Image 1 (cartoon, rainbow, N blue to C red):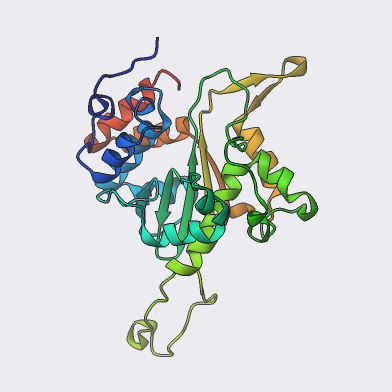
Image 2: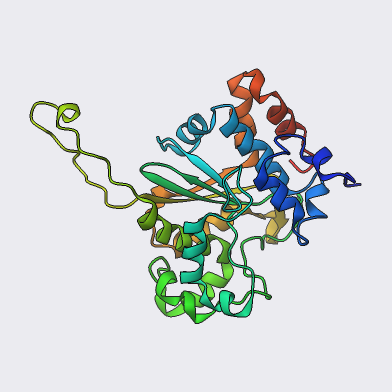
Amino acid sequence: MVKVENDWKANIKVYTDDAAIRWKASQPKDRDKIRSENSEDVLTWQVFRTFAATGHLDDWAKDALGIVDNFVPFYWQRLHDFGKIDADIAAALREIEPYHEKHGLQHTETDLILRGKRHLVMCEMKLGYKRRLITGWQQAKKSPIVNDYQPYATLFVVDKENWKENMERFAQLYKNLILGNVLCKSWYIAPVEDPVAAGPDNEKPDVEQSTLTLHLLAVANGATKYPGPNGTFHTYELEFGEFCKSCSAEKSQLHFAKWQNIGAWVKSQQNDNLSFVRSRLLEHPLL
Protein backbone atom coordinates (compact mmCIF):
# COMPACT_ATOMS: atom_id res chain seq x y z
CA MET A 1 0.00 0.00 0.00
CA VAL A 2 1.43 3.36 -1.07
CA LYS A 3 1.53 5.90 1.75
CA VAL A 4 -0.34 9.09 0.80
CA GLU A 5 -0.49 12.01 3.22
CA ASN A 6 -3.49 14.30 3.52
CA ASP A 7 -1.15 17.28 3.85
CA TRP A 8 1.55 17.62 1.21
CA LYS A 9 3.89 19.26 3.72
CA ALA A 10 3.78 16.16 5.89
CA ASN A 11 5.01 14.15 2.92
CA ILE A 12 7.75 16.52 1.75
CA LYS A 13 8.95 17.38 5.26
CA VAL A 14 11.83 19.71 4.32
CA TYR A 15 11.94 23.35 3.12
CA THR A 16 8.16 23.39 2.72
CA ASP A 17 7.97 27.18 3.02
CA ASP A 18 10.00 27.73 -0.16
CA ALA A 19 8.05 29.30 -3.00
CA ALA A 20 9.03 26.71 -5.64
CA ILE A 21 7.65 23.71 -3.76
CA ARG A 22 4.56 25.65 -2.72
CA TRP A 23 3.96 26.41 -6.41
CA LYS A 24 4.40 22.74 -7.30
CA ALA A 25 1.95 21.67 -4.64
CA SER A 26 -0.64 24.17 -5.94
CA GLN A 27 -0.75 22.74 -9.47
CA PRO A 28 -3.86 20.65 -10.25
CA LYS A 29 -1.81 18.06 -12.13
CA ASP A 30 0.53 17.63 -9.14
CA ARG A 31 -1.69 18.02 -6.07
CA ASP A 32 -2.36 14.31 -5.63
CA LYS A 33 1.06 13.05 -6.74
CA ILE A 34 3.01 15.26 -4.40
CA ARG A 35 1.25 13.76 -1.38
CA SER A 36 2.52 10.27 -2.30
CA GLU A 37 5.76 8.84 -0.88
CA ASN A 38 6.44 7.44 -4.37
CA SER A 39 6.58 10.85 -6.06
CA GLU A 40 9.77 11.50 -8.02
CA ASP A 41 9.19 15.25 -7.65
CA VAL A 42 9.18 14.88 -3.88
CA LEU A 43 12.39 12.83 -3.83
CA THR A 44 14.08 15.29 -6.19
CA TRP A 45 13.18 18.19 -3.91
CA GLN A 46 14.19 16.38 -0.74
CA VAL A 47 17.59 15.38 -2.07
CA PHE A 48 18.73 18.31 -4.18
CA ARG A 49 17.18 21.10 -2.13
CA THR A 50 19.01 19.62 0.86
CA PHE A 51 22.26 19.36 -1.10
CA ALA A 52 21.99 23.04 -2.03
CA ALA A 53 20.96 24.25 1.42
CA THR A 54 23.74 22.34 3.21
CA GLY A 55 26.51 23.21 0.75
CA HIS A 56 26.88 19.72 -0.73
CA LEU A 57 25.62 20.32 -4.27
CA ASP A 58 28.98 21.25 -5.84
CA ASP A 59 30.74 18.37 -4.06
CA TRP A 60 28.18 15.91 -5.35
CA ALA A 61 28.46 17.24 -8.93
CA LYS A 62 32.24 16.95 -8.77
CA ASP A 63 32.25 13.41 -7.39
CA ALA A 64 29.29 12.02 -9.35
CA LEU A 65 29.57 13.85 -12.68
CA GLY A 66 33.18 15.00 -12.76
CA ILE A 67 32.05 18.63 -13.15
CA VAL A 68 33.70 21.36 -11.11
CA ASP A 69 31.61 24.51 -10.84
CA ASN A 70 29.52 26.66 -8.51
CA PHE A 71 25.93 25.66 -9.23
CA VAL A 72 22.64 27.43 -8.68
CA PRO A 73 19.73 24.94 -8.83
CA PHE A 74 16.37 25.57 -10.49
CA TYR A 75 13.48 23.31 -9.46
CA TRP A 76 10.85 22.96 -12.18
CA GLN A 77 12.51 25.99 -13.80
CA ARG A 78 12.25 28.13 -10.66
CA LEU A 79 14.72 29.26 -8.05
CA HIS A 80 13.84 27.75 -4.68
CA ASP A 81 12.46 31.04 -3.36
CA PHE A 82 10.50 32.04 -6.48
CA GLY A 83 7.04 30.84 -7.43
CA LYS A 84 7.27 32.14 -11.00
CA ILE A 85 9.21 30.53 -13.81
CA ASP A 86 12.56 32.14 -14.55
CA ALA A 87 12.14 34.80 -17.25
CA ASP A 88 15.02 33.53 -19.41
CA ILE A 89 13.68 29.97 -19.32
CA ALA A 90 10.19 31.19 -20.21
CA ALA A 91 11.59 33.11 -23.20
CA ALA A 92 13.55 30.06 -24.38
CA LEU A 93 10.43 27.88 -24.16
CA ARG A 94 8.44 30.37 -26.22
CA GLU A 95 11.17 30.21 -28.85
CA ILE A 96 11.44 26.42 -29.14
CA GLU A 97 7.78 25.56 -28.46
CA PRO A 98 5.62 28.14 -30.26
CA TYR A 99 3.03 25.42 -30.96
CA HIS A 100 2.55 24.90 -27.23
CA GLU A 101 2.32 28.64 -26.66
CA LYS A 102 -0.30 29.05 -29.40
CA HIS A 103 -2.48 26.13 -28.28
CA GLY A 104 -2.15 26.60 -24.53
CA LEU A 105 -0.29 23.33 -23.98
CA GLN A 106 2.13 22.75 -21.15
CA HIS A 107 5.70 23.61 -22.08
CA THR A 108 8.61 21.31 -21.31
CA GLU A 109 9.12 21.37 -17.54
CA THR A 110 12.65 20.41 -16.55
CA ASP A 111 12.77 18.65 -13.19
CA LEU A 112 16.08 20.18 -12.15
CA ILE A 113 18.54 22.58 -13.78
CA LEU A 114 22.02 23.20 -12.39
CA ARG A 115 23.35 26.53 -13.64
CA GLY A 116 27.05 27.06 -13.17
CA LYS A 117 29.55 29.62 -14.34
CA ARG A 118 30.98 27.32 -17.03
CA HIS A 119 28.53 24.41 -17.17
CA LEU A 120 24.78 23.87 -17.45
CA VAL A 121 23.30 20.54 -16.38
CA MET A 122 19.75 19.68 -17.48
CA CYS A 123 18.36 16.92 -15.26
CA GLU A 124 15.53 14.50 -16.01
CA MET A 125 14.43 12.49 -12.97
CA LYS A 126 12.64 9.13 -12.96
CA LEU A 127 11.68 6.89 -10.07
CA GLY A 128 9.06 4.28 -10.95
CA TYR A 129 8.26 0.81 -9.74
CA LYS A 130 10.74 -2.04 -9.73
CA ARG A 131 8.90 -3.98 -12.43
CA ARG A 132 7.66 -1.86 -15.30
CA LEU A 133 8.07 -1.29 -19.03
CA ILE A 134 10.90 1.16 -19.71
CA THR A 135 8.93 3.92 -21.42
CA GLY A 136 9.68 6.81 -19.06
CA TRP A 137 11.32 9.10 -21.61
CA GLN A 138 8.83 8.59 -24.45
CA GLN A 139 6.61 11.34 -25.72
CA ALA A 140 3.15 11.65 -24.18
CA LYS A 141 0.34 11.59 -26.74
CA LYS A 142 -1.18 14.79 -25.35
CA SER A 143 1.96 16.75 -26.31
CA PRO A 144 2.99 15.77 -29.87
CA ILE A 145 6.41 16.13 -31.46
CA VAL A 146 5.69 18.94 -33.91
CA ASN A 147 7.85 20.25 -36.76
CA ASP A 148 8.78 23.33 -34.72
CA TYR A 149 11.35 21.14 -32.98
CA GLN A 150 13.16 20.13 -36.18
CA PRO A 151 15.86 22.86 -36.43
CA TYR A 152 16.70 22.37 -32.76
CA ALA A 153 16.45 18.56 -32.66
CA THR A 154 18.64 17.99 -35.71
CA LEU A 155 21.50 19.69 -33.88
CA PHE A 156 21.58 16.59 -31.66
CA VAL A 157 19.95 13.64 -33.45
CA VAL A 158 22.43 11.58 -35.46
CA ASP A 159 19.83 10.22 -37.91
CA LYS A 160 18.54 13.57 -39.11
CA GLU A 161 16.10 12.08 -41.65
CA ASN A 162 14.34 10.23 -38.85
CA TRP A 163 14.72 12.89 -36.17
CA LYS A 164 11.06 12.74 -35.20
CA GLU A 165 11.09 8.99 -34.51
CA ASN A 166 14.20 9.33 -32.37
CA MET A 167 12.80 12.29 -30.51
CA GLU A 168 9.52 10.49 -29.81
CA ARG A 169 11.39 7.61 -28.15
CA PHE A 170 13.64 9.88 -26.07
CA ALA A 171 11.44 12.99 -25.99
CA GLN A 172 12.13 14.18 -22.48
CA LEU A 173 15.88 13.82 -22.90
CA TYR A 174 16.02 15.60 -26.26
CA LYS A 175 13.70 18.39 -25.13
CA ASN A 176 16.00 19.11 -22.22
CA LEU A 177 19.01 19.22 -24.54
CA ILE A 178 17.16 21.57 -26.88
CA LEU A 179 16.13 23.89 -24.07
CA GLY A 180 19.56 23.74 -22.48
CA ASN A 181 21.26 24.62 -25.74
CA VAL A 182 19.27 27.86 -25.98
CA LEU A 183 19.91 28.68 -22.32
CA CYS A 184 23.66 28.06 -22.65
CA LYS A 185 23.97 31.02 -24.97
CA SER A 186 21.70 33.38 -23.04
CA TRP A 187 23.08 32.50 -19.61
CA TYR A 188 26.80 32.55 -20.33
CA ILE A 189 28.63 35.45 -18.71
CA ALA A 190 32.16 35.99 -19.99
CA PRO A 191 34.68 36.34 -17.17
CA VAL A 192 36.25 39.76 -16.71
CA GLU A 193 39.89 39.67 -17.74
CA ASP A 194 42.26 40.47 -14.91
CA PRO A 195 45.86 40.99 -16.11
CA VAL A 196 47.17 40.75 -12.57
CA ALA A 197 45.36 37.47 -11.86
CA ALA A 198 46.38 36.08 -15.24
CA GLY A 199 50.07 36.37 -14.41
CA PRO A 200 53.04 38.37 -15.68
CA ASP A 201 52.62 37.19 -19.25
CA ASN A 202 48.85 37.76 -19.22
CA GLU A 203 48.31 34.13 -20.12
CA LYS A 204 44.84 33.08 -21.18
CA PRO A 205 43.16 29.66 -20.90
CA ASP A 206 44.02 27.15 -23.62
CA VAL A 207 40.36 26.95 -24.64
CA GLU A 208 38.24 30.07 -24.52
CA GLN A 209 34.50 29.63 -23.89
CA SER A 210 31.81 31.72 -25.48
CA THR A 211 28.94 29.66 -24.07
CA LEU A 212 28.21 27.36 -21.16
CA THR A 213 29.09 23.71 -21.67
CA LEU A 214 25.84 21.77 -21.91
CA HIS A 215 25.33 18.53 -19.98
CA LEU A 216 22.38 16.18 -19.68
CA LEU A 217 21.82 14.07 -16.58
CA ALA A 218 19.24 11.30 -16.41
CA VAL A 219 18.54 9.95 -12.92
CA ALA A 220 16.51 6.76 -12.68
CA ASN A 221 15.73 3.88 -10.37
CA GLY A 222 18.42 1.21 -10.66
CA ALA A 223 15.96 -1.36 -9.31
CA THR A 224 13.55 -0.92 -12.25
CA LYS A 225 13.78 -3.91 -14.59
CA TYR A 226 11.51 -5.27 -17.31
CA PRO A 227 11.84 -8.94 -18.28
CA GLY A 228 12.87 -9.73 -21.84
CA PRO A 229 13.62 -12.92 -23.77
CA ASN A 230 15.99 -15.62 -22.50
CA GLY A 231 16.01 -14.34 -18.94
CA THR A 232 17.31 -10.88 -19.85
CA PHE A 233 16.08 -7.62 -18.35
CA HIS A 234 15.77 -4.15 -19.85
CA THR A 235 16.73 -1.25 -17.57
CA TYR A 236 16.84 2.51 -17.69
CA GLU A 237 20.62 2.35 -17.92
CA LEU A 238 20.41 0.19 -21.05
CA GLU A 239 17.78 2.49 -22.55
CA PHE A 240 20.00 5.49 -21.83
CA GLY A 241 22.76 3.70 -23.73
CA GLU A 242 20.44 3.51 -26.74
CA PHE A 243 19.74 7.21 -26.40
CA CYS A 244 23.46 7.98 -26.40
CA LYS A 245 23.83 6.06 -29.68
CA SER A 246 21.13 8.25 -31.25
CA CYS A 247 22.63 11.51 -29.98
CA SER A 248 25.53 13.49 -31.45
CA ALA A 249 26.41 15.27 -28.19
CA GLU A 250 29.79 14.48 -26.69
CA LYS A 251 29.39 11.33 -24.62
CA SER A 252 31.32 12.96 -21.79
CA GLN A 253 28.43 15.43 -21.51
CA LEU A 254 25.72 12.75 -21.27
CA HIS A 255 25.41 11.40 -17.74
CA PHE A 256 23.33 8.63 -16.15
CA ALA A 257 22.95 8.08 -12.42
CA LYS A 258 20.86 5.77 -10.30
CA TRP A 259 19.15 6.99 -7.17
CA GLN A 260 21.06 4.18 -5.50
CA ASN A 261 24.34 5.83 -6.59
CA ILE A 262 23.23 9.08 -4.99
CA GLY A 263 22.30 7.21 -1.83
CA ALA A 264 25.75 5.60 -1.67
CA TRP A 265 27.41 9.01 -2.06
CA VAL A 266 25.30 10.49 0.73
CA LYS A 267 26.17 7.55 2.99
CA SER A 268 29.87 8.11 2.32
CA GLN A 269 29.68 11.71 3.53
CA GLN A 270 28.86 10.82 7.15
CA ASN A 271 27.47 14.31 7.67
CA ASP A 272 24.62 14.96 10.11
CA ASN A 273 23.19 17.63 7.79
CA LEU A 274 22.39 14.85 5.32
CA SER A 275 20.79 12.45 7.83
CA PHE A 276 17.25 12.94 6.49
CA VAL A 277 18.31 12.44 2.86
CA ARG A 278 20.44 9.45 3.85
CA SER A 279 17.53 7.66 5.48
CA ARG A 280 15.16 8.68 2.68
CA LEU A 281 17.35 7.14 -0.03
CA LEU A 282 18.29 4.04 1.92
CA GLU A 283 14.75 3.28 3.13
CA HIS A 284 12.64 4.42 0.16
CA PRO A 285 10.11 1.67 -0.71
CA LEU A 286 10.80 1.87 -4.45
CA LEU A 287 14.59 1.73 -4.15
